[in-house]
Each structure stands twice: as C-alpha cells, then as structure tokens.
Amino acid sequence: QVRLVESGGGSVQAGGSLRLSCVAAGYTRSKYWTMTWFRQAPGKEREGVASFVSDDRRTYYADSVKGRFTMSHDNDNDAVYLEMNSLKPEDTAMYYCATDNRALGPLAVWSPPNYGYWGQGTQVTVSS
Image 1 (cartoon, rainbow, N blue to C red):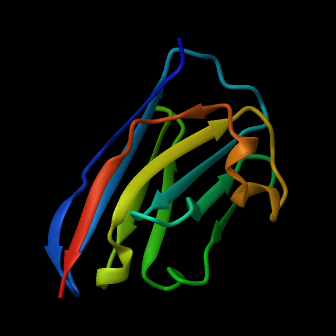
Image 2 (cartoon, rainbow, N blue to C red):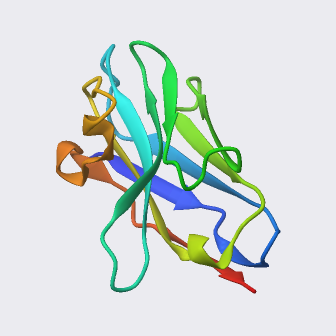
C-alpha cells in the first residue's frame, strides 16, 4: 500500500515561512518518477506548485511561487520538501504531494490526473 504523508503546515503571518515535508512509503521506486506539490484553496481548482522529475533532475515551479518556494528531495528517505518563504495570503490552501512512477514532461507535471498516488494534505494558512 503506497502512502504519502505530508506534514509541516500551519498558520503564519504574511511574509513568514513554512517548510512542508512529504514522505513516501510502501512501494519501490522505478528509475523514472515525478513528485509534485499541489495546492487547493476553497472554491478553486487544484494547482501545481513545484515538481521534481527524476530523469533530468529538474525542478519546475509555478510562476506564482518562483523565487519564494524551493523544492528539494531526499532520495535516501524517499522524501520531498517545500521551503516556502515570503508567504502571501493567496498562498493559503491545502497542500498535497503526489507522485507517479513516470518521468512526466514539463506540461504534464501540472495535471492532477497524471498522478497515481496522493497524500492526505496539510493546511497552510497565511494571514495578512
């Protein structure tokens, strides 16, 4: 049973920082894989925030978070992290990590149906 467990969410004031973690367990990684942070605010569609693709080892960022968010990964622990700085009220959302055992292309990484496994989410609330 594949499990993704997110943690690190919370409530902060605008300009503050949070670090989210996502640990994967219960399956064997293939050589090619993608792991992505998504977020979903109430009444809005789920949107991709940051994505790491294994084959070219590139990290992609949504324009809305470039320069503020940094995604990193830890192969030894099969974990990814999202360092979020200069947080804004519009960053308020439930944040999810998702993974699939394919190396997705730069457009495909942002499409939720491309992911087979999802975590339960962690709430981030930024007050003004």
